Length: 255
Image (cartoon, rainbow, N blue to C red; front, side, top):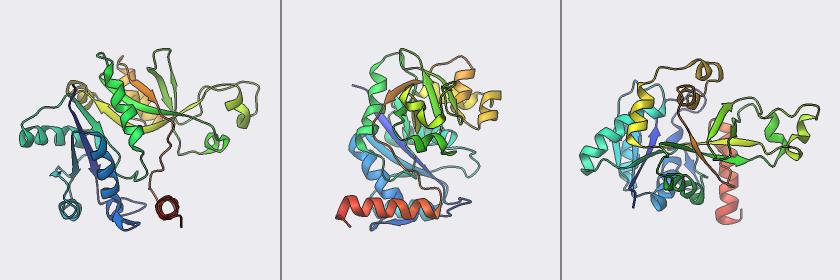
């Protein structure tokens, strides 16, 4: 049986919502919601942070954390440093490291299980999640990321443009003529793949799209995908926060 390590990268600094891991949502800090959901699915869960305000919060609710450098440009390299430190703390190297987004308190536990299932394929090294688009409004949302896949559910390409392009059909009708997937930004890596990814230089397609997963594809590697049917709403702005608070209060209390 494979052993999994879930790492939740958490930064205090954010241009649009400073200190967002600590914002209160229905009586708990956001990072605690994510931690508790990840703990239902994964063997070991750690928050990886560079800020003592976040580590103190995690310690306060009984979670595990590891301090990482403040110089990381993205959560993936922070996960690599965290894995190296956690392996020493726990005396275990882990077969899969999962990067769980710390700003998605509504992440569904079944979604995390879907990612876990990717590694039933012994050839899987790098995996992520995709969701079929059912709402045409998503096709107009510039914050969404779209992906095409092959018959084996390996990603072909990730784009901020809607793909595939359905020629000769009004855009809002595309989902009636093609299966369009959007990307859910949770990743799983084998240790070897995580190290290899972090050693690759940014690629042209990554730079164009501002999507780091294209770096792995452009280097000739595969990204295994699993289909989930649970959407998740990232908290990036004060407006996102209020929306998530309202939705979670309704879900928890019927408010």
